[in-house]
Amino acid sequence: MIVRATFVVVVLNGLLVSTVGAQTRDAGWELGADIVYQDARGITFNGGSRAELDEDTGIAVTFGYRFNERLELVFGLD
Image (cartoon, rainbow, N blue to C red; front, side, top):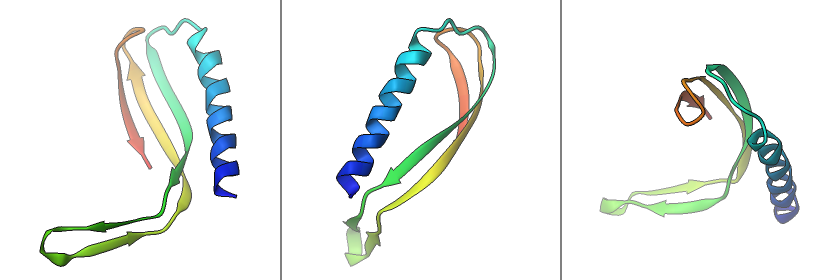
């Protein structure tokens, strides 16, 4: 199930990137949304502390200003 969902997200992102790359981008404001996937993992810290993270899917929202085709200042919230 996880592999299938990851594959679908990768394919959809590839399609979106190919359409965006073909467009010219002038200066201006930009708003976006992304799907974020967190894989499960355990992390061990110095001193013996440990954190267990469960897998989860969420949404990221981005807001920024594009100065030219190569420079953009963006704020993102996951």
